[in-house]
View 1 (spheres, protein in one colour):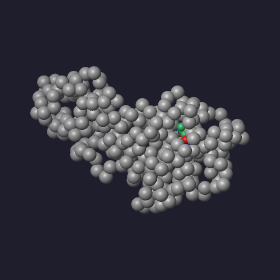
View 2: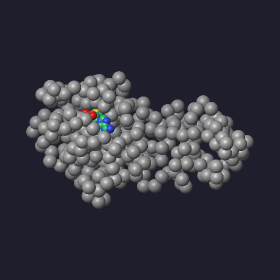
View 3: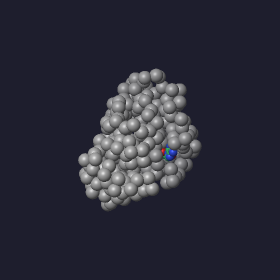
View 4: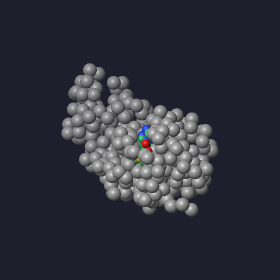
Length: 291
Ligand code: SAM
């Protein structure tokens, strides 16, 4: 069998052979450490019965490691220049399909139905382009796709924000949104030296395990997320000030204060100290006030 795509030498050979030049604007930093790639796939728990969706296969380094284990891999790549390269590097893996598309424009619900078996174990395994990490992740979560797990590499700081807990400086609306849909863990960090070209920031692997049901009961998800976001708009301000600004024109500040006191939440607290259950109780209370 040929050498792994991801060894530094083989990667350089492939890039030279095809005269490929990196596009920074597409977040093209390719991993050149087969051990790290294997650890990423291992962390997903996929087996030969699983299907894998990859976003941004590049020259196929991670795709190859997923394909060695999973029954089917579907990879979305936006850069058409990579398609002939992928056709070449992934030729030994007939159960891999590369789709030339911006993943943000893909109808993933329909595509999952086309490419995978009903009820098949499904994972997303990807080294995400850093310029669109959050929109991609939120799309995967909000569309409520039938995914068991998402294992993705991203900028370390973003991974830390997503998995941050109340009381941490990193905790914010992104943490609440991601943790509403999934259990989140930062698994390990990856040094800049594992990439060609090297990014300016350190990277980390984040695992999101889908929840069967959300951890809190929310009547109106859009309103809940709007309240969470509004609470964090000015992190240094109190919950009262942020919420009074959000509800201004609909509710007096005194009424906002009274509503918070009614549910035993101190209006002087800051959003970063609130648990998801407390945000849910705020959304419920203000939802009932019909603001
Ligand atoms: N998986 C490869 C690896 O680990 O070496 C490459 C990862 S590189 C960080 C990100 C890849 O995502 C690039 O191949 C880039 O062209 C692709 N990409 C960027 N934006 C995309 C989008 N919106 N949809 C699909 N692919 C995208």
